[in-house]
Amino acid sequence: MDEETIVWKGYLACIGEDSCVVQSPWYLGDDCVFGADSDYTTLAIAAIQLLQSKGSQINSINALNDVEASIIFMATGVEVMQTSNDDSEELTANWDLCISDDARVVVCKTDCDVELWEPEGGLEVDEEFHQQITLAWEKECLPEHVSQGAYISEQQYQEGAAARLNLMSQKMDGELIWPPRQMDKKGNLMPQASTSLQEVATIESWTKLAAAGAPSEFSIRAPLLGGITTVFVRFEQGPRGVFLLVDDEDNNPKIGDQVQFAIRRIYAQEAFIRYGLKCQIIRD
Image: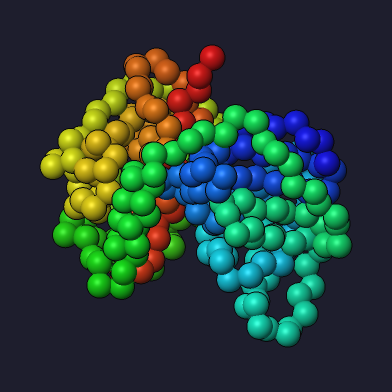
């Protein structure tokens, strides 16, 4: 494996011919820990996407039950063959997703030997903030936690998640429309989303909601994050959309900034995490 550290989707990564390691950039002492909106699922998606970007063909992957298989499939098209630690059933995929004890994942060909590397560019997280944000997510993920704002059921989320996670737009009358919708303004059924938008956009406007003014979906975490920042962006192909900025970077958006996209945790309701695209400002 090439031991050069690259930054990918806000994570630190190292890639080889048939394997890659992706981890959080954050450290608490000697321990690698998750950022404010990351988990094993977001790391796994980033690792698979990195290998796919280098030409690897991955149809299915073996994994334990530490990741959300449906989200990985919707985001990457890779089927996750899951088993528990005590399950004797033999998995048949040619790729493995390995989860470490810290905030790190390995994706590799089955029976491939992978050596972990010492990444460059690690950052020290504030211990109190890390403990508070971890506890906040634990509270948010409780089955009894339901937002007092706009309620989106798990079924509603699942219906549109794949198109949103892949920036799939609809083409109608020569115009691209995103996010996809079921009907046009006249009540006619819209065509299936089939055109992928480029994963770079330009900020046209932005706003930061104070903790007290943030939607109730974020009421537990917003005070810890100092509010919630959203950006209104324009894609080169024409569509515009509103996105959150990632939570674990120092975000000071400006109109005209270029952004790229990464899949992160958005919020949780009824013990189900809603994952989605968030923006990362592209720095020179």
